Image (tube, rainbow, N blue to C red; front, side):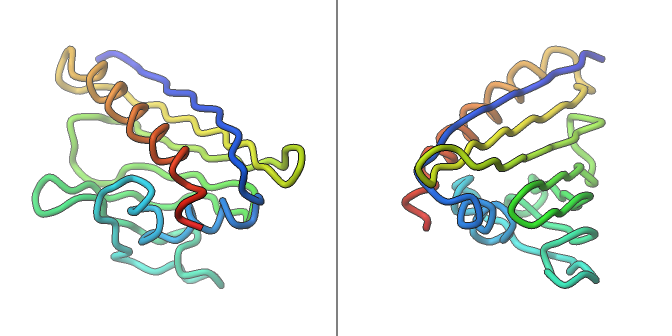
Length: 142
């Protein structure tokens, strides 16, 4: 079992609260990813997409479920994969920071282990490319 780490840092021309809102809302996050995402369990916190909420990404049996572990408005989202998949120990961390002139720095880190040998590199590459494209598309989703 090999371990993988994806680190994405992007600066986007969107205010931090607006960038966070797209990532925090499960449906809007799906538009960013270009994949269907729906909330299947609400958080018992003030925001239904907050800590304890679960989102399903994808369609049918190839979909994945993620649970929100940390939810600090306009600052931080952390989540883990909770469904059966070809990867284990998946942990995502998205940090939002103010940058100059109303821009936002997004620091997105994902770590995971592969279960099936040699699949982790493909999963990491696919995730990183998809997330980078989505983050760069974010201003159009505001």
